[in-house]
Image (cartoon, rainbow, N blue to C red):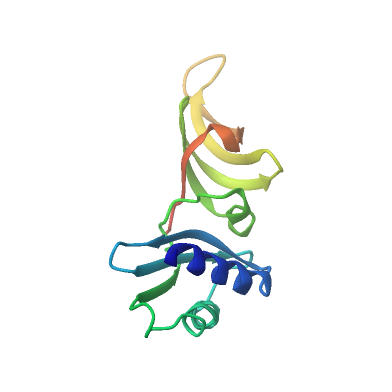
Length: 153
């Protein structure tokens, strides 16, 4: 099947580049191939071109007509794999779980989850007024429904 062939070629190309990994691959009914990649240190145009060539040059257009698009994840795309988190340490994330939404700086990535840090204004325990407190929240990967980098402009 055409999709199996495309996926096998992608696997071969990515074996040669262990710093790059697949986020999504779809093959439409009209043989439109859409591949989304990310890398441990980000990904650039040359990386996308290298993977694109590895797939395209091993498919025969005489045998099967197709269109191929290889791209990187967008800056505002949700983080989908645990492997994507380390490159965002120090950045602000918005993480949605069943317990609520947390927005903080990604401080740590562990095998089973992430740790966020932020400051919040809360009422003083004694007296009137508010004071700033530091908050930390560990969120396990299996609890994350959606996580996105919050960009500053």
